[in-house]
Image (cartoon, rainbow, N blue to C red):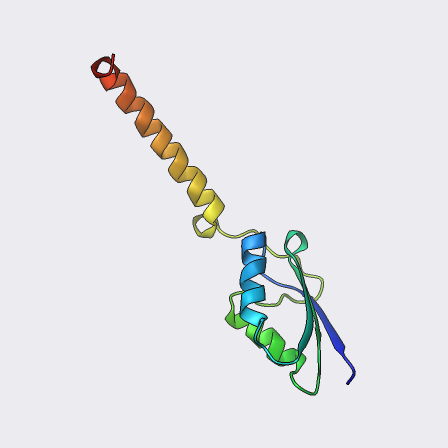
Length: 112
């Protein structure tokens, strides 16, 4: 059986958590011989058996997982701030710190 290689950039891939989601989503797909994911470059390389699965089926599977393939040469865009968990966590942490400091300024004499 000869293997074919599919190498492409995908959208929405920028961290190890998302790489793990792709691995989980493709782990039971028959015909995949090897899977390499590079989150920093938003790249996925798949060695597969063409007699069991086609490149188009693999692309469709990536799309259904939330990582649509990009056109050749296209660079992935940064996720919108309100959809990026890292940005949301930073904003929520900042708001909680601000609220905590305001409460402390008003109520610190209760604890002394």
